[in-house]
Length: 176
Image 1 (cartoon, rainbow, N blue to C red):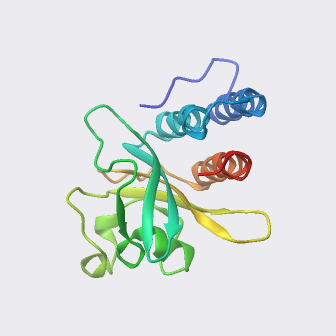
Image 2: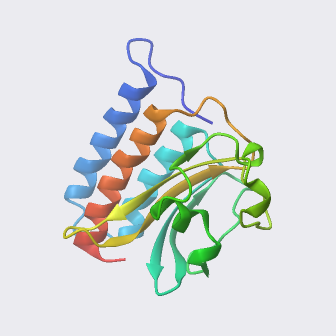
């Protein structure tokens, strides 16, 4: 779950301070691999947003390929290297505007019966594209919980966008 903020700071300040620390740590990552540098970023996102799963998926042809996955203990539902059809994903629908980047209660959506289904529930999600220099979309940074979460808001989406900026920089510098 989310960390308790320091008494003199808000959860947003804590998140931003920790993300800034990770940016500095990754800037001189040297020979460390992308997964090793990206893992603490994804864990930070998952914990601060109270999500079950956070992942980076790369768009490869017609597929989403899961390149980096961070899950709460006992909540891993996808493995690194697995793929799913982009058209059967929420990710593609967010990128092309058919779904919003933030959804607090997926089952309550009017179009829920027409959404793709999985072997696990998606109660809420946040998703942002990873846009490389030049504008090409690499894929997405996405997180979700099995249960709805009515407390999610634009501030949480902004946190994910900040983490996506760091993830994009790392991907550009170090590759997939």
